[in-house]
Image 1 (cartoon, rainbow, N blue to C red):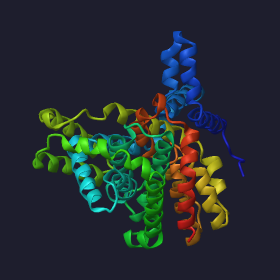
Image 2 (cartoon, one colour; image 1 turned 45 degrees about the vertical axis):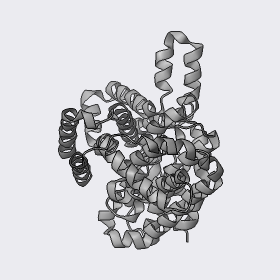
Image 3 (cartoon, rainbow, N blue to C red; image 1 turned 180 degrees about the vertical axis):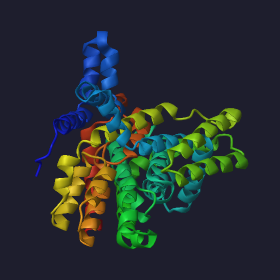
Image 4 (cartoon, rainbow, N blue to C red; image 1 turned 60 degrees about the horizontal axis):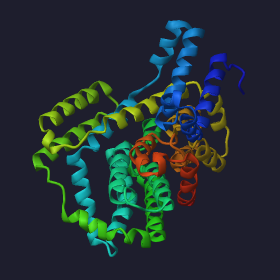
Length: 423
């Protein structure tokens, strides 16, 4: 099965495995920073999850330069597609801007007051259900950015239990991963196969969308019910915050920001266009900075670095990933894809599966459904996850999110998604 594996592919697989293990070991490096203050800067750097895959991709490039030389290394790097990391950076910066965030927050607040429950509880439910489903229209990274910021400001920045923090994080990651399957043009794992298999929006909703909608609502309702008492206890502080709302942004500025976001989403596969838009957006923000907050440039760049590292390392994993997806019975493939998504990017997984020829409709369904289902279990499972991770990490104890804690918190919502997609 692996007859033609090159030495560089084996090296790439080993470095990929080390990077995956590194994501689960960041606390070890944080402790080393305390134990060895002389090198605390290096250990703190290696304790940042967003740095992990970029760092080990750098090691891979160094090995390639020695092994393959300059020309061979550049040939490999130029064969990789870095559009997704660049797009996630662009959409994070624009979607997290004050005018757009204020618009979405006001909309969610208005809807929350219509629901028969305390406002904070309703806000939690909507941020874990409605906003992730927007990922099918404004792209998953944008939905993750908006939901994470609203959850951070409304709930997780307040003195709540660790159980609630991880429960919200797990449901958010799972719901964003499956919430992008209502359409054929917004979620990366669907985009990789939709054109080739001729899937349109009607097919997506009838085959995947209603199941994802059901699972998303069940997961969001489960968290809000389980922690309803703790969420209700935040109502008084939330009322105080609503009593002194931020200065409203002029409607014209909001419309211009929405136009930037819409254009970026529309040209998501054309970096030559959306990078220019981002530069123009930065100029507009500087011109009207009185209506702005700090842009998420640092967070966006770290997330892009993480994803670029994943793309660089992922290019050498085809030799072992694709055989695992071939000649597998559809139901088994669903669980294989769910498990593999937890340690690989789900878009790369569906792309490799689409290269298998002569597959049945059941195979195609199982591959995409599994890729969506497992996308919330780890920070590397779905492209928007590093964005949510970067935004929410400061609200956790010691400003660190445990990968094992995330996995445990996402397990039950993932089982809900499994039940829905196997229905």
